[in-house]
Length: 166
Ligand SMILES: Cc1cc2nc3c(=O)[nH]c(=O)nc-3n(C[C@H](O)[C@H](O)[C@H](O)COP(=O)(O)O)c2cc1C
Image (spheres, rainbow, N blue to C red):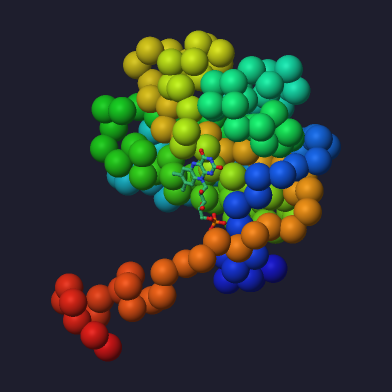
């Protein structure tokens, strides 16, 4: 699959079968994250991978009861060092590498920005000085995605100067 095909095929999935994500697929997803770009190459992020159903259920509660969190075979919790420059950006880039590799592997994904940081930290034993930026659910999709509407190019892109047209 070429990159643009993966980009076009990627959609947020919020329904998963309860099948696990295979160990070799987890390795590929994590390797994709590891190779992501990073400001000054600090790589100031870490992931906590949650696969056990009982722990995903607890995580679901910490994620404002978003039910897909319990169903997805794997949930990646993205943690960073808030003191490092561009830490959140770096983490987001690593997560998006996972998302695109998931497309290649026929898996679906959904970012999770709605969660209680205090609860997630408690559940996953994350140290106080770390920041939980976001989580990412990855799993075997149940059904087809509903493509989200995207803004037209003209609303997003300026040419040569702000307000400039092509
Ligand atoms: C930073 C971030 C946080 C998000 N948090 C959630 C969330 O908590 N729950 C959810 O169902 N979707 C969440 N999403 C998914 C967005 O709703 C989704 O990306 C958007 O509707 C566009 O759909 P698409 O990903 O299919 O293009 C989040 C996405 C991003 C990038």
